[in-house]
Length: 584
Image (cartoon, rainbow, N blue to C red; front, side, top):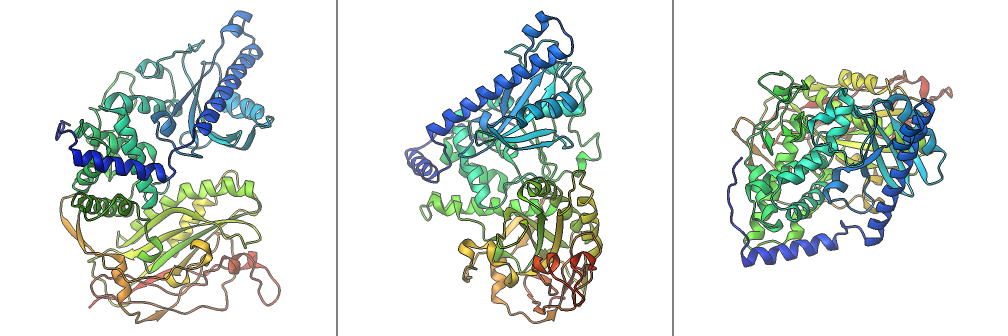
């Protein structure tokens, strides 16, 4: 894509840029010099461990002493650390590259795992060998590390191996290609942008914004680090002489008007004789289903944002509109940069929520169980969209919350629910998502590393029933009536669609009462004899879900006993059912 403008900054742009950079510095998104030095020390230590491990394996496999002496493994970084945009306490994405005879399945996930397990510096060691990209997660001297492994078709791995060349992919499998792709993509991004310093500052700003607005999470169907990096890099290409204050404003202008599913691409898609599949909606039917394609620039080019669903795309487009409006006000001197980073009022934006409680016997079990369940949450969003023909919109919130009063290890995720605006329904129509939730739980309960005590509970809660532990300092904030003007959001086919502010819903009175009950885990349980009644609502201008009450406390699922003393393990879970009032 050719640049839109080669214009450089004006004096006013420079002044705005200074204010933006000061805000970013004051926000604590930069790490200290001491932490930078500690990261470098940890990487150096880890590099030596890998080299010693490869030499040990070379000796054990019966190679000559000369081969043992020359045997080598190298450590490369990618992600935010490689791009220079990591913050305090961020993890380091690393890739271990070893020779052809060092295997992932046994040598990496068994032998290296056991070496790390015995080291005092290592804690929270968690191998995830069945992931789409197999990874070993751990902390080394308190710094979080994600370590991938790639075995290349070389007997001796040179220290200066150029992994940007496609020849490194010869005779490798799909998992190795995906493992190498992180480093190859990061290197390519840095080659394709006109100014690395401006790119880094802009990316830091947009990542900070995305986290504040609740749209930073690849695993739940939003965008992760590489996705935001590619979006920012595209804007840097379109405005090669712009400084960060200009690039942030142009970012929102560009993506507010972007017609998805037109792809974001930093360079043409490259074909190669190696034969790996590349993203091509003309050829592959699956690629035609992608809603927000953001294509990686390294062969084999892939869609980095295949997790995005119709609901999460809607949320992100709304947030792009929000950012664009604030930036327009900043340019008119009607607002300052702090307005851009106002946190999302997720728990004030919907009248109905799904609460997903995750429990385990101890913190170690919860760490792995939570990671598995979180990776499945986007499937619940997709299943709800599928089973309601897109009429029920599901907004997953990427933040997790912990109820420390629970006797077991616990965390919870929440999803906002609303009917698709403008859709007419008949009076009394219901969304019965019992089968949807059951199907989701069955998939979650197929976890290969399941242990006793691991469980999941899904329940529907009204806004006023939200648990206190999700709010700052343990109390619910006092809701204030705020007027947010309606705006038009553009869908992928270019049609304008009215989007009303969720906060405007607060002005309408609740009119109807109904009831809903918790859905517990996939294991049989008795239904509770009691049901808490709550009110529904009818909003003529913006139809919303009419909820049925639920007993939202996980304690009723985990610890409640029946009259004869039987615990919840014998209880049959009640159903989730959402009903809709027709609008006037």
